[in-house]
Structure formats: C-alpha cells, structure tokens
Image 1 (cartoon, rainbow, N blue to C red):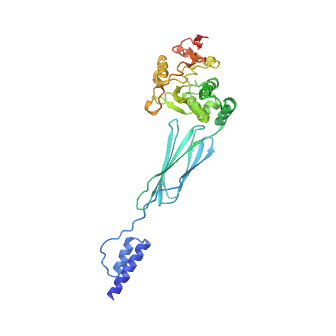
Image 2 (cartoon, rainbow, N blue to C red; image 1 turned 30 degrees about the vertical axis):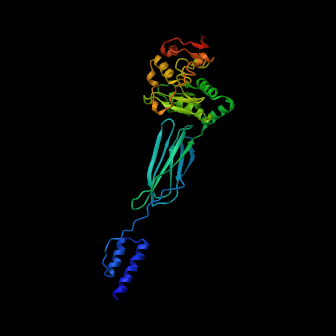
Image 3 (cartoon, rainbow, N blue to C red; image 1 turned 135 degrees about the vertical axis):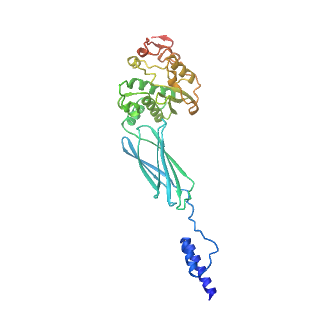
Length: 342
C-alpha cells in the first residue's frame, strides 16, 4: 500500500512540473501524501530570445512631424525599447520605454530637408528578469516639403548630370549667394536657422546656409559634412569632397554683411574649397579666426591646396585676402579677377 502511495506521489509531481505549475503547488501535492521533500525544485522561465524581423516605418504627419512605427517579432514576455534619431547637424533625440507588445509608435518633430537616421534597439525580457541580446535596426528618412521640392527643381533645371563635382559645387555656392541674404533682424526668427527658411524666406544665418548647402550636396550625391565651430552655437559651415579630396567651404562668409550689392554680381571665393591652413588664416586676418576652429578629430583632413586661390587662378571672382571685409569692417572692398583688380 505504501509503495502505491509513493508511486502516485511521484507521478503527480512529474505531471505538475511538466505543466509548469509553481514549485509551491508541487510541494503541497507531495506533502499531501506525506512525502519528504529532499530538495526544492525551481521552475525557471525560458530565457528571452533576441527579437528578430525588426522594421521601421515612417509616415509624414505634417510639415514638421513624422510618425515612426517600430515593429519586431514576438519572442519574450515584454521588451526594453530605445528609439532614437541623429542628424548630420548633431541634433539627437530618444524615446525609451518598456512595452508588452511587439511594436512602438511615436511622433517626432523633424526639420524639412535634413537626413534623419532613426535607430531602433530592442531587447526581450522574461518575467524572471532574464534579458536577451539587443537587436538593432536603422533607417534614414528625409522630410520632403516645399523647400526640398524647390531645390530638386533648381537642380533639375540648372545642373547637368555631365558636370564635374567641382562645377556642381560652384553653381550651388553662387546660387546661394545670389538668392539668400544674411538675416540681420534684431530678433532673428527660428526659420533663419533652417534649410526651409533659407530657401522659402531667402534669409538665413550661418546654420541655415550650412544646412542648405548640405541638402543641395546630398541631393546631388556629393559627399558633404556639416561643421560646427567649437564655440558652441557660434558658427557653422561645410566640408565637401571634390575629386577624392575634402575641402572647407563657408558660403556664409562668402556672402558677408555690407557687400550684398557687390556679391550679387560678383560672387566671392575667399572661403571656397579651402585647405584648413588657408581657411583659418583668412579668418584670422579678419580677427575672427576662432569662429573656424573645430574638432579636427571628428572630421576628414582638408590638406589639399588645389583651390586655395581659386578666384585669381581660375578666372573667377575673389576678394583679396586682407581686403575682404566691405563696409562691415570699415574697409574698401575690391574684387580681383585673374590677379587684376576690377
């Protein structure tokens, strides 16, 4: 009789363990038959599996917002999710949280024209706290609106695909100087700091100029960088890659205050495709060299001097270094072509 009871208790314990019932129920069932529990039996949740099949979909909500939906396979009890973005201008944003579903949706504010890189990071978690490895997915998205469409039309109408990258860069440089003016408002509107404001309102400060040049280059397929000064918020310009080499280009400083009427007819090339040494030495001559200091470790080297004196060498217009200032610096502005003052 006692052996039958032992056998029944053993079978019941096995059934309860296989069914996944908590260990305390197993213990009570064994105690019912007067059995001694030799050791505790722990039922551990299965370790969470790494999420798979990650996807990011982005839908334009309105001119300044997008709805980002992230999805992944269901393979855990819940998920730790991190959805973030970064831009070439240094802007970043993140939304993080724990969700039970295998998706997350969030509305992000986004500037038109700028290429946003969205990154999704997901880790599965079990109720016992075990966490899987993190899965990651990225996707780029550019919010297209009136300004972007206008730039695409300008490119299609005026820039030939057969042109060299140098010719394309020069055209964009000249077009911006002729069509955008520096915003000297007492209270500068936020739009002047953006690509959209520069294109639609035709006014910008350095950030707006640099964003605009960057968008043009990206749409043309030319490698470009947005470069902020180490003096935070003080200045911004670009680096662009031409014939396999990187150069500085500062359209803002080639369209300086006090010279608008002149530069509308004769674009200046003081800061056009410059090596770092020439670029910063010209700035120093104006007494504002610190504005062109930047974190060199984060950007390519600009050592080529091919175009350092492009205005005088190649037949394009250039203000002579040291005499580039116009009325803003109480100096006389003169334009040179092929080494001859005009």
